[in-house]
Each structure stands twice: as C-alpha cells, then as structure tokens.
Length: 58
Image (cartoon, rainbow, N blue to C red; front, side, top):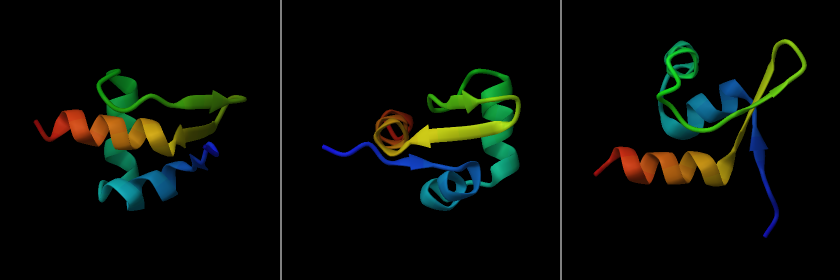
C-alpha cells in the first residue's frame, strides 16, 4: 500500500475542515497525527486522517 501525504490545505479539503481548525487541533494535540518537515511544513498521512475521522465519528 502506497503512503499518501497531504499538505494542510489538502487535508482540510479531505476532512471538510478549515486549515485554521486543523492548526488549532495540532496546537492542542487533539487532532490527527501529522509530520512536521522543517520549521513550517506540515504533512498528514491520508491513512491517519481516515483513522482519526473514523474514531471522531463514534
């Protein structure tokens, strides 16, 4: 299975959330797992977003 990484904007579109809300979730460590690349670049693994959305809907 190929790992697909999404930018914050792509992740926001995929989850139907705003980029700023995802940023707030990162700040409070409540959202989906993410990778920080360098000082500013954030990437989300699509599988992690799927897992998080599945758990959040319960």
